[in-house]
Image (cartoon, rainbow, N blue to C red):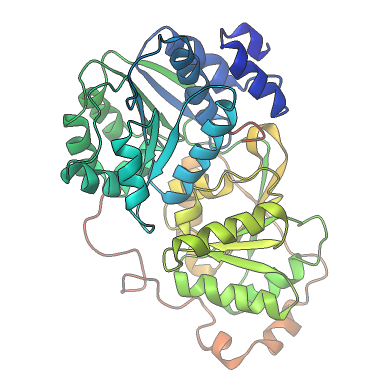
Length: 416
């Protein structure tokens, strides 16, 4: 099947062709026709399979077909992170390049005056994070009386991050007569029940098993004590095939420490976490995309917000404590049928979390030892600080385990 069979507008097809894409992914093939037909939709697919284009292309087609009228905001896309909002903005602009549409982003960490101006001007497509948008709406910025489309992208992440109250407040101020689309890589039953608040008789499309990462990702486990992880990572990065590597750290200070050690080994590295300013985060992403840096070290803020073609490897330097985070982390590689590797470092204290992940994805993960890595020599060379807690040390949250409290877990190549 080609994009020409899906009923997309000619100028949008031209933009897709100029981007180098000829065949839609399964989620695009399944989602585009019902969206064009006017249905509300729940789209569930693995990370990296093209969910963003699945809603962007049909929405743009319907906007292009509409009769000219007064300038007003017709599309609102809500996203959980600034990085994802920026990625969606880039995609919308790419596919609307031949259309007379205006696009703007609204999120925190940057000046609000351009955002207030965009909201006041009736920008056609607004891509926003809930917090900043609700703040500006509370100060009477933005008129959504003409809204036709509401999109909740990475909905499970937004709900998991505590955005439910903000989203409810935003939706209450939107027209009831609209088309609402909800897309996510995973979707728990709890979240599905919430869709009844926002959607009317939605069609549900599910591509693949909900819990499974992309089949094109090769998953490997390296069992290693905590104090050998820096040396093991440096050893693995000697492989020239690891040319675009995303490394996940559990903590912000840990990400900075990993980056410093890699720089000491001559590996060009950038970091991405919430302590970085918005400009620093965007610079890190751009340097990673362009190849100016080989490794990007990030916390889970990047698990959903990075839409970068060509990531060869994802490394879970710190193994995630929640299976859903594992799925989203490794989904940054192997995107849209490209090949990718996901490597996880597992300490003795991570074994319980590893078993939880294997149950979640429905299969075991291959264990492997690093060829040519001298575990004994690396242990001897470890610094006193690295040897101080050789078995992993306490995790954030105290008591040597999971975070405390009652926080509840709700649980492209053409990824645009």
